[in-house]
Structures are given as structure tokens and as C-alpha cells.
Length: 149
Image 1 (cartoon, rainbow, N blue to C red):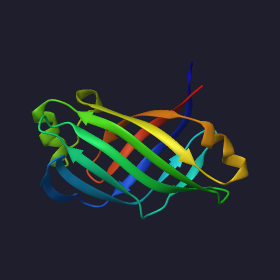
Image 2: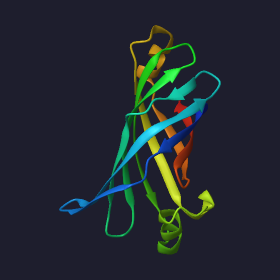
Image 3: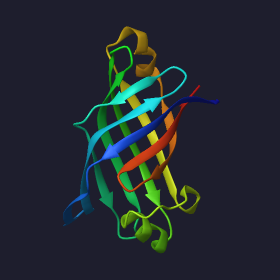
Image 4: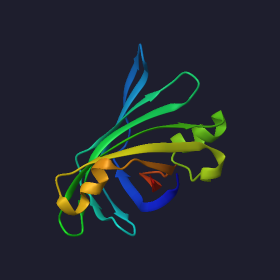
């Protein structure tokens, strides 16, 4: 098994909506308002309309659950879903929550990516798993995704 570079993603976000604490943890929803992705076999724009449905756990770890739509440069539409985790020392997580710049080496933020499309040119994505290393910015998430070959 090898990792092959897929694309670098910039996912632009609305402010966090905090729904409060439930029996599962603190539920937050963060709407996706756009962005872009660029790589050797995949590039285009992220369409507004998706979201990240997060759960923040008692220890500060965040469970990531996103779903949104990509449009490639040649017009194909691709559904992407990611799941993952973000955690780190409390002071680092506090700086992230405040929107301060934080070196991604100070915390752990990893994603698992799945794709779905009817576009013939990108049908290979339906049979492909990807992993990503991410970083949180004040109003965006950036990540480098790699296919598992």
C-alpha cells in the first residue's frame, strides 16, 4: 500500500453554530461556504451548501463529520464525505477556538475521505479511499489528501 497525492483542499467556513451539550457531547455545526481543491488528477471548486457536523467530547477531542459537493474544472460534480478527529493540548485547542494561528504540528487533525460521482471521467473516485492531514484556520480548513493505492 502506498499514498499518492490527490489534492490540496481549502474549505471556507461560516462561524461555528454551537447547539449545546447533548447525551453525545457538544454538538456544533459549521456551514461550508466555498473553497477550492487542486491536485494532479483533481481540481476545481468547493460549492457552498455542505457542513461539518462536529461533536466535541469532554476531553476536547472533536469528531469530524463533513459532507459537501465539489465541482471539477471540467464541470463534473463529486460528493465528498470526511470523518476524522482533531485533538491536542487544552491551550492549543483554546488558541484554535479563538481563531489564532496555530502550527499544525501542535495538534492532531486527520481525516478519512470517501467520494461519490456519476461523472465517467472521475468514476475511479467511487472505488478510492483517501486520507488527509488537516489544519484549522480562523475561517477555513486546509488539508492535503492522499489516495490509498
